[in-house]
Length: 338
Image 1: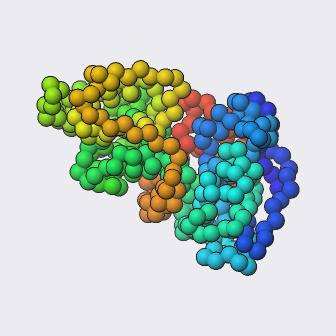
Image 2 (image 1 turned 30 degrees about the vertical axis):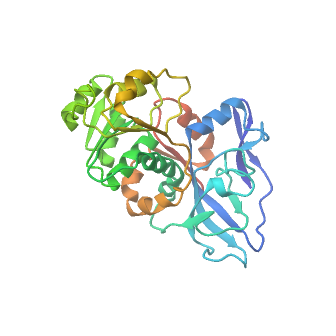
Image 3 (image 1 turned 45 degrees about the vertical axis):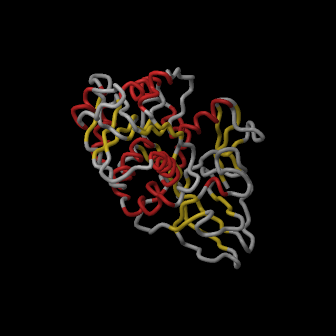
């Protein structure tokens, strides 16, 4: 079968590898779609992930169809459309240093258990949308770290796939008003399409002033006044200006969830921040959310489908990787396999 691998620093190739063979407790999945993540670009740049340096299979956002199920497997059958939990694979994280990648033609799930390693999705959900399950689980974990309550107000910084997924998740949890902040007009337009109540172009507008207009002013507390009443902040952008804005504008008792990867240290003045009693929660991966999000994804698949900007066939996987790695060229790239 074919497998897309990192072959060296900055290099990838589609190579032939032995096709896996399913045992009595295993499931063999033919991958039908796999999203490209920003971390894939990082793996390519450094030449892979030890111990598979120079030979790292890529792709950790897969969806596919079961083509073989062992006699001991229950709750799963040949022909089922499925999404996978990359973290649960027994031979390492799929596409992130493990022995298999979601950009393989076939992926073997050893000791397959429904609800642990993979779950089924209805056939009417397109594979390229089902492949959003993994990144939307990341977004859902970031939302869960905020502990949102119905009727609250929120702002999401960054209208990439994770930010858009977080905006959808906040609205589905009953958050009354969700604002999305970005600097790219088409991303802001997409945020409104997926359900954001308002958007802010931070390259042209004062974020704090606009939040005051949209959410009103929070009650004075320990001398803190003139702050927006916004209760929830979510950083899916990963730029210092976001953290600086949140720290300067946070009302008393606000919560901040950081899911973005910050590549440089940021200075925080905890002295001036003390009276805000701001709760800062970091969000990494999806400890419980990988299949929690599937129900939302299935029920609202047409809304989630808006997140996908480019769908390319497997024969153009190199172009797909380049497109995803080029800033501003695409929002979410998904590769489809026959």
